[in-house]
Amino acid sequence: MKNLGTWKIGLNFHYVAGFFLIALVSAALFLTAENGGTLQAQDSQKRQQTARNEERKEEIRLYNEGTDSVGRCNLFSGRWVYDNLSYPLYKEANCSFMLDDYACERYGRKDLKYQNWRWQPHHCDLPRFNGTALLEKIRGKKLVFVGDSLNRNQWASMLCLIESSIHQSSPKLVNRDGNMFIFQATDYNATIGFYWSPFLVESNSDDPYRHHVKDRMIRITAIEKHARHWTDADILIFDSFMWWLEPTMTVLWGSFDSPDAIYKRVEMRLRVFEMALNTWSEWLEININRTKTKLFFRSISPYHYYGENWETPQNCYNETEPIMKETYWGIGTDRDMMRITKSTIQRLETRGLRVEYLNVTNLSDYRKDGHPSIYRKFHQHLSPEQLADPKSYSDCVHWCLPGVPDTWNHILYSYIINSS
Ligand SMILES: *[C@@H]1O[C@H](CO)[C@@H](O)[C@H](O)[C@H]1NC(C)=O
Ligand SMILES: *[C@@H]1O[C@H](CO)[C@@H](O)[C@H](O)[C@H]1NC(C)=O
Ligand SMILES: *[C@@H]1O[C@H](CO)[C@@H](O)[C@H](O)[C@H]1NC(C)=O
Ligand SMILES: *[C@@H]1O[C@H](CO)[C@@H](O)[C@H](O)[C@H]1NC(C)=O
Ligand SMILES: *[C@@H]1O[C@H](CO)[C@@H](O)[C@H](O)[C@H]1NC(C)=O
Ligand SMILES: *[C@@H]1O[C@H](CO)[C@@H](O)[C@H](O)[C@H]1NC(C)=O
Ligand SMILES: *[C@@H]1O[C@H](CO)[C@@H](O)[C@H](O)[C@H]1NC(C)=O
Ligand SMILES: *[C@@H]1O[C@H](CO)[C@@H](O)[C@H](O)[C@H]1NC(C)=O
Image 1 (tube, protein in one colour):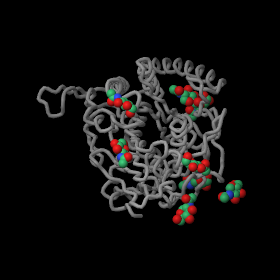
Image 2: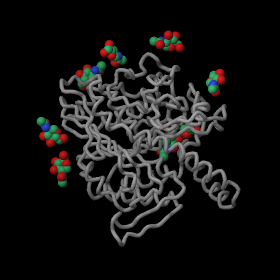
Image 3: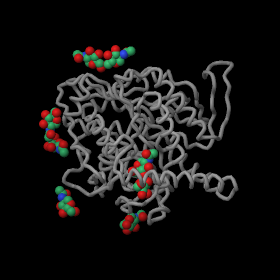
């Protein structure tokens, strides 16, 4: 693997995030459980139930029509079918962009069926993935994934998917420029990048390597420091979810080093998330060239730490099959956050800026089998107690490659290929 040298410096941040998130998710869920009995919780449960009923009605309507809001086939409503003839779309060992975090086969996973599932939309077929056609489409252009480690997962998947279509003589290197990780397909003069900013707005976790901080601080109205690195891209894919699950965080108005800065510790996670998305959308509204740049927001990537909703009461460890019950309703997501994202995007649309919402939460939720669990590199020390109980350190957040993010990209591909 030619590019290992470049990778080595670049690869340590991901697992830190991953591991940190495991603790964080457990903490968040624990807190939720503790508050379960209060009136407030019941009240919010009722509201959630009403909202969910509304959502379901809308779903059923769209489901029956089989289309999305602008009349195209709804690619997000469908089912997983086992198809070992066409999937996987590449071999793990053949991908020079593979990261230790997703290389489940290399790290000892023996059941490999997770690589063979194809997403079949109910009312149409996904176009066949053609890396050459994609590269032709983005010739001379810049495509950037912006967000957290799940977007990094999707970016790595994209590079694996197109690699067999790249025949360049120059080495296939990933270079880093600050928070931007860049692959250049030189024959096509095309750039496929990943930009690390887990909250989208500025925070004290913006170092791609050292973001394991105790007290998380978010500069809720500041995004320019990041955005100026990606505003000129032709295609942008955003995501942000996991890092918002912390029960409390510090919000900062003003800059990190200003003496007048106002710090405020807040527990209103949803409100803070909404404010950050407002900052993000205002930036887009003012700075994005509408004739040039296509915008996507990938919805929540669900985690699988709790098994109450499927048959076995445990996490993703030792799970080898997807959930086949179509009406399964996942719990590893936050419907309120999805609603906030959706309404932010709808507001932007009324102002003439279209952001495609890649609604992959539902389809990914069925894939409890798709996570690395213990089959990845763990860089931190694992204690004998942990090793004796593999569930305790399983990664049920990220995804093995080949795997679920290939489907996200396959859907993204269909949008890009069909765009003008
Ligand atoms: C996402 O897709 C699922 C499955 O089709 C659907 O039930 C849900 O309503 C969609 N959510 C949004 C916000 O579009
Ligand atoms: C594909 O799966 C079928 C049914 O499980 C099996 O009989 C066949 O050997 C598999 N083919 C390959 C190429 O793995
Ligand atoms: C993987 O690489 C090998 C050796 O370079 C090649 O023969 C094979 O066709 C590749 N397989 C896939 C699925 O790309
Ligand atoms: C893939 O796309 C390229 C460029 O558009 C085209 O020449 C080629 O025939 C396509 N391959 C397949 C298998 O469809
Ligand atoms: C490569 O693409 C960039 C835009 O991404 C453009 O500015 C530059 O002129 C292109 N170079 C060539 C040699 O086509
Ligand atoms: C927006 O992008 C289009 C297409 O790339 C370009 O022709 C135009 O000059 C750009 N407009 C501005 C204001 O930069
Ligand atoms: C893993 O799953 C298999 C088959 O479902 C079961 O027999 C085995 O006991 C499980 N192992 C652990 C450690 O849970
Ligand atoms: C996915 O959407 C379908 C159709 O709206 C719904 O019946 C199912 O419960 C959803 N599943 C998940 C995991 O969100």
